Amino acid sequence: MRNKKLIRFIAIVLAVLLVGGVVVGALVSALAEETPSAGGRNLVTLTMEYLEDEQALRVAQRLVYVNPSGKRLDGVVFWAAGNMFRRQSALMYDSKDLDSVFPNGYAPAGIDLRSARCDGKPADYGFMGEDELYLRVACDLGPGQACVFEFEYYLLLMACGAFQGVGETDVRLSAFCLVPAAYDGNTEAFALKKPLPFTRWLDCESADYSAELWLPEGWMCAGTGVSRRVQGDGTRALWRIEAEDARDFALSFGKRWRVYERESASGVRVRALTNVRGAANRVLDTAVRSVEQCEAWFGEFPVKELDIVQSDYPLDALCFSGAIWLPEALLGRKNAKALARSLRFCVAQQYFGLTAWVEPCADAWLSDSVSQYVACLLLETEAGRDAFLSDVNRDWVSALQQTVPGGLKVNSDAELFDPYAYDIVILRRGAVVMHELRLAMGLDGFLNGLAEFCKMGRDGGTLTEMDFVSAMDRATGGDWEAFLTDWVFNVDKYTEQTMFWYE
View 1 (tube, rainbow, N blue to C red):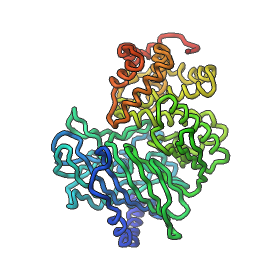
View 2: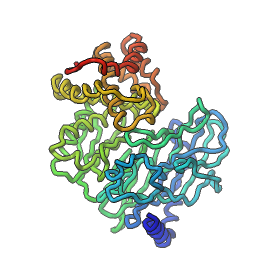
View 3: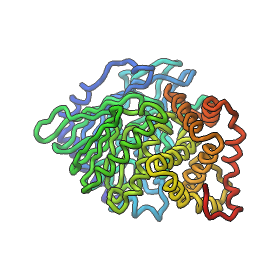
View 4: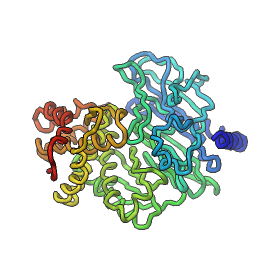
């Protein structure tokens, strides 16, 4: 392991010596105006270059940060999630999963931070936590005031199926830049939790992103927002990426994709980037139908472009704002049904958990349980009631009959789960709770309640369980708090009953 780390360090040093003098000028010249973006959101400017031989991303980042705390801050805490890969003890995976997540074996990666500045001056900074997953940068910032943070760093990458990784044909990047953590007014501290392998965990402030990325010529770029190739010099190409009001900015780029695209009836551009024969039509058919149906139920689709990208090594579909990453195995013809289920779930998540933003860990069920059930409703609309019942009985009955130790409930904090229990309790039993709510209030009332919940989320705030109840009440004129609470806490009582078929 030490030899691998030394080799990577030498490679980075050589890269600095070879390209540093040329690139620094370009990085500095990319700085934007020192004002917050529309709506007072943070504004992030990134100038990046992918160093293919060194398996690293060189980054100059500039952030116009608006203090949301209501108090004076002497420092801001940033997610430095890439440092999870610095040492094996920091990984979010069980030892039994390491071989599948790291097909070529584990090798150190992470953030090599070169400088940090605040309002043009060198700033005191330090990594926090046992695993250095967070970075605190000193500042002096009053309530509602803005300052400018600037960073220069390398992100060292490795071959893996996690939220950052390099494959044989592509690079996957999420939570890859220094993202300000969300400020919790109740605790008067920044909300920090360790990454999770099975659901969303990045709790952060909303921002507008303007990024430029140099890639080797012939590579394609996809991800959150709108990406366009703007120029090339024969060996490299410059891509520009723009995204508004994003909390989980994600990028991927690859060299063997073919790009297929289709528009929904409302003009949402859906792209499939894959090299698996016949996969593009399967992807686009399901995705476009799901987008159109969700728009009919919940209103305007949250993004103008949705990129669905084949990626090496991820164990399952990964979903971010405007971006879905799919493992190659899921794209094969034999897995067409599993592919469709994953796509329906990820399209639903563009509304629930991404637009209707909830605390990713504390209220994970308001994203994942809801999205899981909406995916089932999309199947029912597309294939009929019998197909719906067949699908949910395959997924739900076994989950309802199993005993899960630890007293975990549908609304328990996600960090209390392991992947197995999360699948049973949040995804499956949580979907049952949504189904019981739908049966009690009627399908139209239920869908109208979800639409109201989405509408409440479009102002950028963080929604809670009580917001969900309020949305259902307003949509139906009823009072659903007691009913929902009863099912959230007691759905596991189905384990005491003999069940063969659930309707």
